[in-house]
Amino acid sequence: MTQALADGSLDTATVDAAVTRLMEMRLRTGEFDGAEDPYAGIAAADIDGPGARGGA
Image 1 (cartoon, one colour):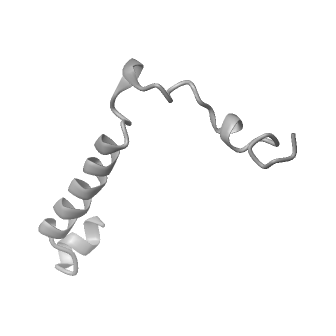
Image 2 (cartoon, rainbow, N blue to C red):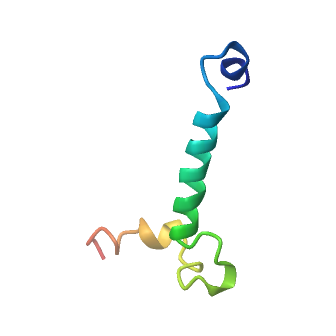
């Protein structure tokens, strides 16, 4: 990315827009809610386990 910015094939406005979209999505999905997030205690194993796949 540094090289693309340096040689002009990528401009900072494009990077700014992409980062803004990413951060807005993370904010909307509650990633920054901390202890107030009701889903914070759910681990990947809880989501991708046999019970979630109907094999329990």
